[in-house]
Length: 329
Ligand SMILES: O=C(O)CCC(=O)C(=O)O
Ligand SMILES: [Fe+2]
Image (cartoon, rainbow, N blue to C red):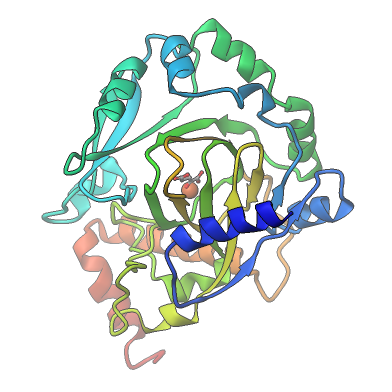
């Protein structure tokens, strides 16, 4: 116990400190009825014993290199330890948009070689690729060994739509995926190394200042957590975070529309994860007042309508200002 505690403290020491309030996400057994309550209520929880990916816990760079097959894998390159997502299809909406990362396709062994020859000053690497049918036979066997019984039961109980993808993430320790939200339900399974999740419920929309919907960084926070601009983003200091640290075998339920920043814990080498993304179920019965995630969905829809009607992203801000300033302010 003492050892576990000191390990926990060790991890904490290496992590960045932020100024917002944080509370821990509960860690529960999947057999605990409370765990199912969290999921059905759309609240994050770490499940410690699902065995969801126990057939993949032996994955490391050598094994994956040998068995991943001949397919192409998307690898992101960054000059910093941050890898902010951007949508290629929206780049032309913003004049002089500067891509924060470059994406290149690599065969898995080539990726491993590049990763192993990394030295300070090189671009950092983060592989993010949905698993597909180009993977080798042993990976297929590992994949079939996932606990599909448990996860499919969860999908049914919570009336989620189909599984859309399993994203495989292989990164260097200290890599950071900056704060964003996704529009799908997610069971995030940790395989190797540890990740720290900073989560914010959807009511933090005003505190996290997402980019406009037409922007390539749609769904990402504009706030740089390391250097928050308190003049532009005064409400950031009111954000309320939940924190979870996941290690091999842990599964985090990451509810749709919940914000997350994901930090690979420094000092443990390569970090490997697989997520399970599920489409949302049919629209729930609408009750008033609307829930925070329903407001986010509505905001997105209204923004999309305005963008489409004006047919020019540059007209969106002046249009919205004319609608609101002095009338609703
Ligand atoms: O693990 C990461 O770096 C990002 C994962 C993520 O954002 C997701 O699974 O939705
Ligand atoms: Fe995400």
